[in-house]
Image (cartoon, rainbow over all chains, first blue to last red; front, side, top):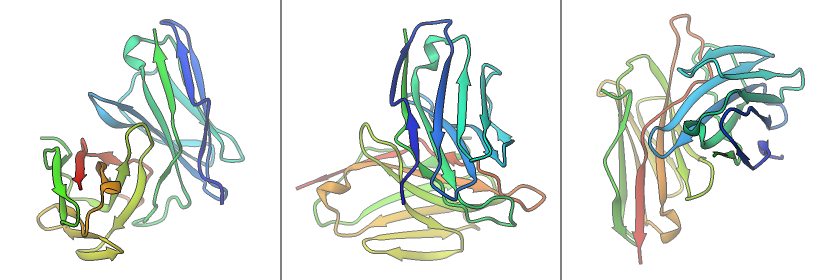
Length: 117
Length: 116
């Protein structure tokens, strides 16, 4: 079974621009979560989508947004890029959602390395 | 206090030794615990998950969970140079309604080096 795929793998943008990152989950996985990884802050949760609905959101400004399509593919968008947005953006998928004491395991994609100049 | 804390590194062990990685968490409602391995320049790879108190073994890896002490650990037996990586502890809490959403809270990671 194919793993989580993310496109593009690398991006270079300038301040003020916007960017859209894409994630295709493992086949059959319905939940997609996004994370930002930086050397200083580590891995931080951005948001999670299930059935095209955002169920949970991390502590990031409104410039960060996302969506999920009916085929479970997800995109995240960052508007008005800042230098501090340079990071590795990771998408993770899991199979189940919304069950009591879920034991969902999350599997990460290769990430998109974003550099903001 | 950080939500998830891992023992400070880097940790260096000789080949063949046991590497011990520790993690504490602050949210008593946490239900699911995961260990990820991340090689330099790569994304995190899930190596262990544990949900009940006690030990869980998978090959050379053993995860230990003690919910009363809010402590989870990972033991790597017969460490190999290929085990050299950053190990990330991740925790998922369960909401008051009993559902578990897809938010993992990660520790800062422990860098492990296994030298020949």
